[in-house]
Amino acid sequence: MIDKSLVKRRFKKSLTTYDDNAIVQKEMAAKLIELLPEKEFSSVFEIGCSTGILTKQISENVKFDQIWVNDIVAESKKYIDNILLDYTFISGDIETISIDKKFDLIVSNACLQWCNDINKVIDKLYGCLNKCGVLAVSIFGDMNLKEIKNIFDIKEKTYVMSELQECLKIYKTYNVIEETVELEFDCLKDILQHIKYTGANSLKECTLTKTVLKNNEEQYRENFSKNNILILTYNPVYIIIKK
Ligand SMILES: C[S@@+](CC[C@H](N)C(=O)[O-])C[C@H]1O[C@@H](n2cnc3c(N)ncnc32)[C@H](O)[C@@H]1O
Image (cartoon, rainbow, N blue to C red; front, side, top):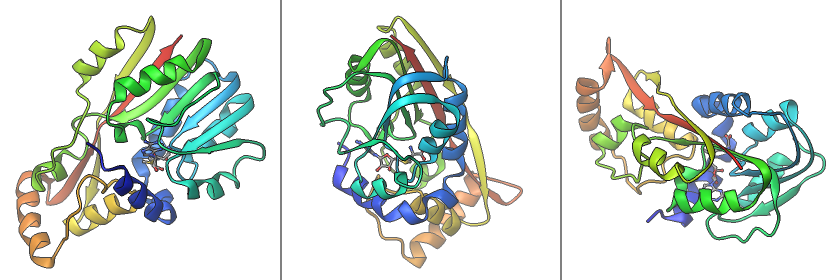
């Protein structure tokens, strides 16, 4: 089970450092908008907005009349206040909040992998779409941060493409695209700082002493480096469903 209070704490703490470190998430937000089958919707609902990287993309590239924005971290609202003039903020866990409205576009970037049951959430969101509505989400696949999971023995709940494809078969029209992106770092400390600054260190509470860092750095360099540069893999997965 995902520790939601840890997720909330870590993402709240990373709000001030997120934008400068969310390199891959920024590319994912732009791609998600690119993948939309149309760019004009009457009502839009964004889930897991954080500092508004995707919100900004929506405001600049999508025409809409009304927009609702959500995050489990209530403090995200003050960032969205700087992007949107007229919107409704819904704070809370998307897995448990009740949504008594229907939308033409439901969109979410790099968030729903923090849910315990993504199939249930997709089903819930599909139920909140108007006829011909679009659900566009990006999540991370099972190769995401694979080096870190290997070194620190983290058993993350991940989404294998074949399993996802199988679950999505129940929807009439859908498309799934997977990518891998490699970032380069000089040392393990920089990698861990990068992960911490994006809030993605919510998988496991662990204390990193200098010795732990040194021992793991050797192992990391041995297994996951190219020309002595440390590699960190991201595995974005985009899912577009049309009702
Ligand atoms: C990696 S950030 C992505 C932020 C933003 N979507 C972007 O484009 O950069 C993930 C966000 O999802 C939020 N989040 C995580 N689990 C959530 C949940 N169950 N319900 C709502 N928001 C959630 C976090 O608080 C965080 O702000």
